[in-house]
Image (cartoon, rainbow, N blue to C red; front, side, top):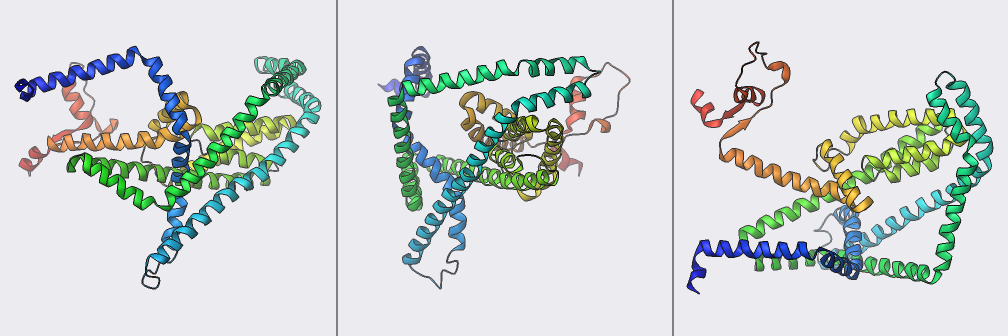
Length: 421
């Protein structure tokens, strides 16, 4: 067994073992995926509880900082425990109140809106048809699709009703499975909520135990790096959640005021829908705009166009003026990467992927940026971007690409700069 002491032999064995594991995983990918789904299903209540605890910890931490701030006046563990209990109870009450308020405001309004829309569909379709004939009479490529829709709306409505009936019949036919699924989901939520309360009540102790395990299992330098990454991840996700919630409140305020000023129908309902959907970055607000425009279109096509214009103006003001000053760059991620994160996360895991991928990619982006800057500093290289108008145009087309690249980014060595000085 002496050959195992050879560094090259150990590397070859390690690489070979990794390749065998990868081959086995790829060859049995279906079985492993089913096993992963089963294991996730088993521990899902605890995953849900961890997510709830993380969300509730954001406001709870702020409350704890402000309760009994004068520790000299309130010494001992008694006040610390009281502060924790009060903060946890207030946070739970606030969360339940927000969910209940949104449900109370949205469900009755949504029911009334659907009832009114059903009654207004015939007259609304007629109004849309007359308005389109008047507005787009010189633009047949726009008028024709609208007229096709207005002429065939009864067929479309009948298909929609039949689809809903079919869906309801499927639910009723499998009522036992449906009821058991509802009960199972409710029990899962209760278990997750109880677990989140337990986690929040002893979060410092759990963090201390996790650190002990990490330092016991890893070398100190690697444990330090792991904890640094974990801290960065926690801060990024917390800032992202706080920023999105604050942005949703700002958007709700802006839209409820603007839509009421311009007398847009269903102002409260549409403002709540846009605010809630804005929690999903980029695509959420525009989805709310599409829903709002569709609701208004039946009642008043002109007001629907006004609403879309107002939406674009309000979103631009909020994104470029208010959000950077009030919320700031919470995740430190360029816009192009935010769009990529939303797209990839949505395609892979739906709405949850959209919400999780932005802070996750932000952490990876920060780690990769830190790694790159360390490498550049180790090579004593500074790179400065130069604007196109600062580069002198060469009449001679026969140029060295490397020299042109140096002109574009101004690659300079720090040691060379010291020599120049």
